[in-house]
Image (cartoon, rainbow over all chains, first blue to last red; front, side, top):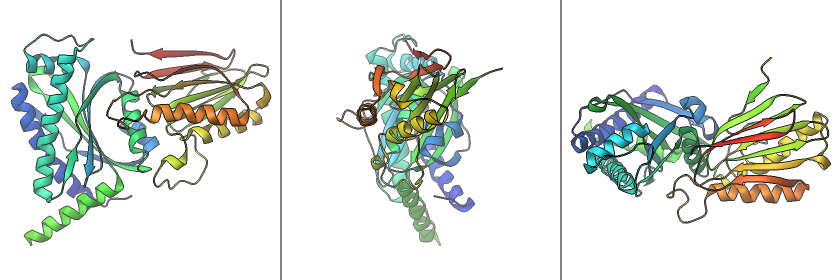
Length: 204
Length: 157
């Protein structure tokens, strides 16, 4: 799988639209300004992806959703456990312990994942006239490498190469960062590019 | 001299006499360690999937430690080249966790399949499993000291 610079720009634009809407929803849920950076795009073999992403063994909380239909792959929302705890506290109104997230905290974070991804995918689907369907969310807190490798293994059953898109964001009121990580199969990448081309052709 | 060898997903490494082999980020992946205590030759592989039959369209046709079955073949070959004896080899397997419930749906998951693939392959090549630290829902880091064959497994508490 290869993408030329025009195709990479198309993917970035689509992701910007989706992530932008997702972060608007996120901002409303935690009442904080959130700024995000330009998406970073990589294409890698599944077994090399974590090296390319330079992820570490640091403990992270990851909200995971699977994407199906026109956009097969995975979306991850990643925070430090401390940030996850702050978000859960804000959402539930109950103090949360970052070293031991309770089921209520996890439920709040899953709901965050649901709402943010729902807003993102609704924006993707409307803009491109495609159908990306999300799974119910899941959450785990552990060594970031272990979590990412497990997700890579799963997508590795579908393809040997993946498109990775990373978007880093900063939550102003918590003074902390998080990231979106999208992993798409080659077929999903092709679907997105073709849908973008149809959209552009429709405007000419 | 630092004899630490760090291996990543899809990689394998072997050593004779000295050195510490280590790998981290073991989730559903499986780490296979083979060690010949008579010659102090051993190796470690960090495999992601049971076999290349698990992948819809693998393009790389070379043998790869990404797959449990091929990783074991690679380790046996490399240990043999360093003077180890397959008849002396004992195996330790680490990993095969299920980190997220939504992965692999209601099935037992890739981690379980990796463990089963390792057990099957090791039976086929006649290597006994000395110990295992597998399954569960937590990530692991593992180190193998070639000087004495001792392994250290670290998990997040």
